[in-house]
Image (cartoon, rainbow, N blue to C red; front, top):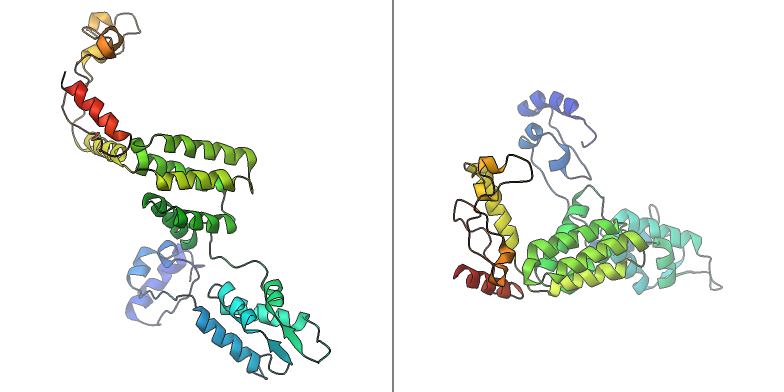
Length: 319
């Protein structure tokens, strides 16, 4: 059904509403990405889950015994470890498991006893690289990236490393992973540990310099650091609040003493008049108005280095 373009899907609409004919569509893609909203709203969506290793094992065992449609006519001695390996490695895809079983059985010569000995080595050679569901514009991509970010945010370095390894195994661009680490370092760690963003940025730069496979190491280092770092989203919440204020409320006028004075005639307009140059005052601080309203956007936490920032801000505001 995902191969139907929007115009073709629109043609289906009238008959689909009347139930004549009944439309049954199948797709390996996320229908919420590929189907038109009107058609999707009139449809029932069922998600088919991958088969479990136990179910795959049952299918492979049946194929070994079936003499008509399977490999039952061949004299095969199958190791249980090899069969279990195929069931787990095919990642819920019975067809992949059956293909590997057939390749191994056909390509392995008979031993002196007249049997084909299907061991773990044959199984590994037959299935080659483990299948990973990870299309770059599909659920596998977005779900894994989401799990990676949330693992770092949740301070679980082991989970973060696993999801990163899966993305790299599936062929993900290491720069994509590095950018996700940078975002997490700023959004979820922030000023609780400013070094996190420095390390994440360095990992991005190194990834561009050295490429795979070596860049896995700085990426892993940065991901682990971000996962283990103290967390604060105060900067993120601050810019969200300020952005909402700008978009929904009347814009504030820039105070005259803060306006640009680089051009001739600015002083005649009163621009810059009364501005206090911070570095001419004790501790390089002087109280003055920088915004007409007294709204607070940044509210530092008591976690990590941000606790020191909070302490300094409170000290300055008491002056």
